[in-house]
Image (cartoon, rainbow, N blue to C red; front, side, top):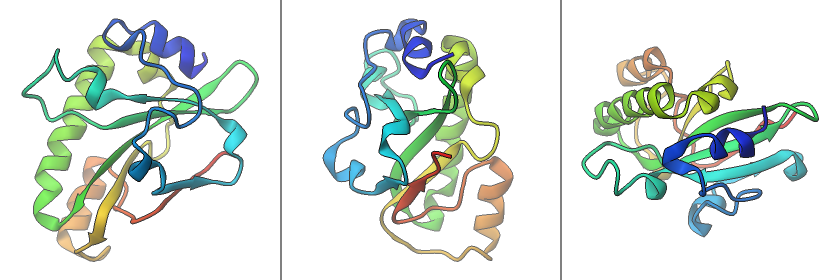
Length: 156
């Protein structure tokens, strides 16, 4: 399934698909790069799209579709957030919300979510804790990639 179709089949975000990285705020878009931008099939500003439906939820920021074959995309989920160790519980809450939302409201998006490290934390500033810290281990156990100031999207 393609990312665009998976978004269109998800009631909460049905009309929120945008081509390429157009759904991302400019400052957040500048924190990402990829080796083949033509393989970015689309994006979704999830936080904005569902803010009225889930106003008090710890919402995740973005979904991004990456072309794998002519008919199949993979999705990754990107959160741009301060990268302080004290934010790890907040990030874990955001991931729990995202997984619940995907499973309950967007099963087609869940199906195309990349199997290997689909939940990406992009630092909105400097990363203030080490990869070898207990906090980083907790983050990894939750399934969130260690935060990076710049994230390179794999499009191979």
